[in-house]
Length: 311
Ligand SMILES: Nc1ncnc2c1ncn2[C@@H]1O[C@H](COP(=O)(O)OP(=O)(O)O)[C@@H](O)[C@H]1O
Ligand SMILES: [Mg+2]
Image (cartoon, rainbow, N blue to C red; front, side, top):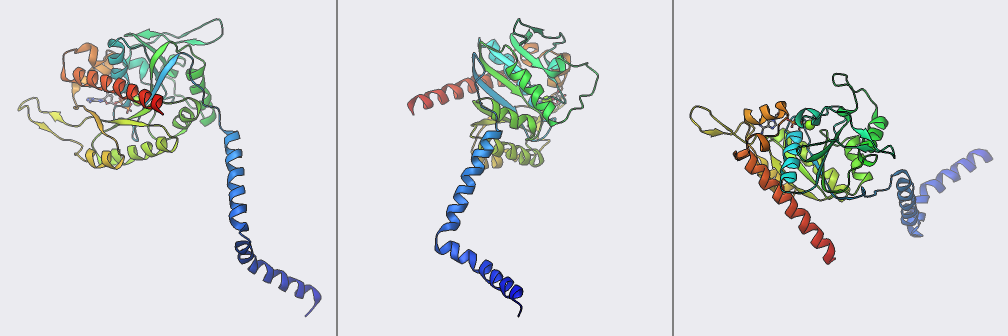
């Protein structure tokens, strides 16, 4: 055997014994530990600082897994219900690619800038509102990559004069993409409200969303079951269109149903007309559900503050 092949063989033997050696000396766990700590430091360097929005007491995110389940409808009616209770409320449309707020809140005007170049959110129905839809041409598609989406959201969130506000509601796009990550990392969120239809396909992805926010340590305030049932105009019987699997998922997520809303053309019509149903039909069952929801959210946030004080 040549000296070179002898050396290769002994190196091979050494490498094979290395894991055992490391375990004996308890080195593997040390290396692993150092590696993890270093990774954490590096990761933290890459993350932006979570800093509060000046003058904003609570930020509540409205999220779902799927699109079209009623996030924007809930956000708008919740925000207006809160404002009607005398709570200083803001509404940020975080759906950069599909902004709904200009239509649903009937706001078209371009926001003004203050002397410090900060955006001043226009007010309608007693709610301060901002949406990328107010800054871009109405019928033009928004074709942006992730980093641009993040910076647009940052501008709407941190480059605007939101305060003084008691609650800022943030409407979000479906899923767990850039906007959700950016929100979770940039500002302290008081909680998340999930919106879902009672259908397995919607609840399953809503649960994933809940999991993402849980990972960031953001409390899940509860779930709003939208389009839970419809009432027949002729016989007045109510029937379930999307099934009734909500309870199973709510138990899994260890949360509760905050409201169950029917599927009704009145709600659709109000959204399209730019007058939230809580204003257009003040004494309707829908309005009452949203008012109760608003009260419940206020109660949950209050309880959260008391618990923090106790700690
Ligand atoms: N409970 C409801 N009854 C009838 N129509 C509804 C209801 N909730 C939402 N809609 C309508 O369904 C569509 C999707 O709702 P939207 O709030 O835009 O969903 P998302 O923001 O989750 O995509 C809208 O046109 C809205 O008017
Ligand atoms: Mg929406």
